[in-house]
Image (tube, rainbow, N blue to C red; front, side, top):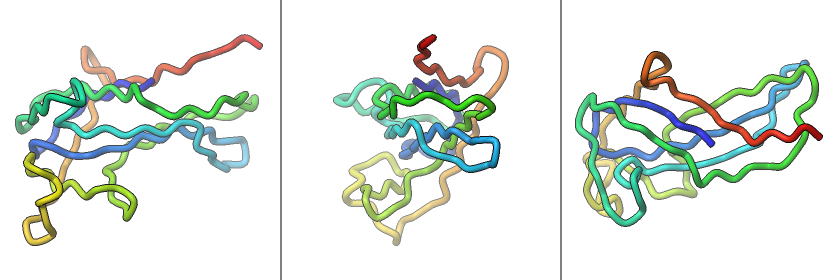
Length: 130
């Protein structure tokens, strides 16, 4: 549903996307949610660490989509964020066994989303004419 091209300063990171409907009054509602761990971006079995500033293709294919009609006049917004909440395992970006990483070895994870040329990130939504 979403293809994000990005560069990182670390070998691994966890990200979420939210696609939101924003109505004419500015009220937003999530209509799609997905997660990805960078080192498993190709498949869930084979870890593949990122190299600093390497252009990565992050495909958010396993996305939960709410089936609904988008109101006339609404806009869609993509929210891309690092996962940092009490419900998910914390990934400090070192690329090793995430369960062994601690706040004693934390680092700042920087991600840059690319938006143009051959690295144009995009959202692909299913559309019905009904």
